[in-house]
Length: 490
Image (cartoon, rainbow, N blue to C red; front, side, top):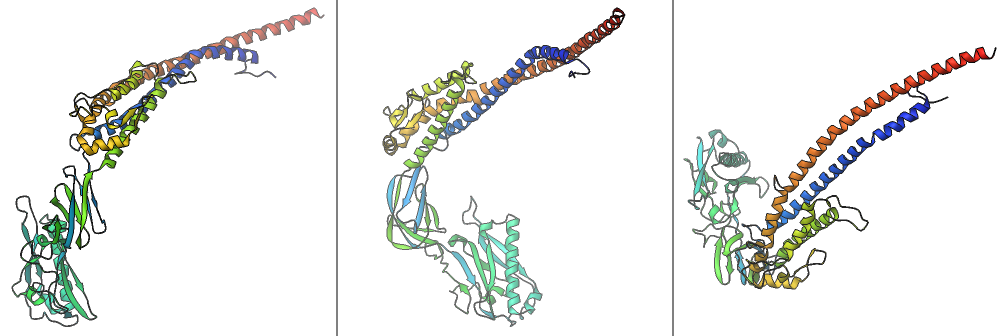
């Protein structure tokens, strides 16, 4: 039995399909054009991403605030004893270091009390005392703040363990409130706790949050001399039973045992911290242990760190160049790259390559006015390679500015690239304009495709109606022929 569409004979169906296939060629062309444009837009987005990633490396090398080529390193002869780091303002040199003592927190302890006894029952009124802590400001680095602590009278009728525990709680609450109210900072508080050195005994412990003489603890006692009764403010070294200081506070940064004391190149230094930033220009020391035998500190240009930055730059450039070649040239199989018909992007590869081989006229040192002068070669395929690492490192050791000028001077590599790349990747740049034009064309094509769909739908309807009429007419003729044949057979 013949197949049909809405009752049409298969012959007519075939004729309709054949006609529609030809009619759809225009729509198919539009669909293909739309697909090509979308692919082109995606390639431009990928190019934008590649160029932006490359430009990030360019901008790092061209940073006006942080000189990426003047990177210093400080190396300790024994990192278990001390470590060091160097900023760009550090000077190349060697230093001897020894450490007499490390900075420590100011810790005060009370007398030792039998936990179950009631040594404070003689106090019958609320007691308010003050703990003075460091709160340095820009105007006054020695500024200090008094934090008031109040213990209510009913506390003192309890046993010793409960009393010292409540005092510790009130001190901590007062310190936390002072931090919340921005009266002091976190590192300026005094922390209180209760310890039991032997079973059945209680002892109050106060400790500064930060180290050094600057963060020493001072007290103002209450009306009934609660702190004196506790012994925490005794100006003596604590024993196993009596209160006082754990580490001698002293009267100044030089004689206070709370401060670190160390020697740099034979000079004595005293600091409130074990992190020291101004004993050697541009160098931060981190003191970890005491040691009397001098150790060495070497400050040099960090050629490895600079080399890594330049290697990252080369890697991103080479990947960008590979992408451009793939998308703008005709490959060995004779296929055109997606952007091969657009001279804007075809010329880009050549422009980048020319930038890399051009000499720099604004470099301060005439011996260093090209990438080749610092050991970077431009290969035959346009890619870069750090071909001579010794040459690169020697240029850095002679003067980091020599290498920096190749990139950072007025017409240096990084400056040129930054200006050139901005034309493509900035808001309103060439890539954005190209993508917008493509989007406009896609919208136009989609309108045309919609119109074609409408036209094809109408054409198919007309063809169906036409062949339905033909089929109906043919059936009528066949019926008449059959009727006439009955008469002729008689």
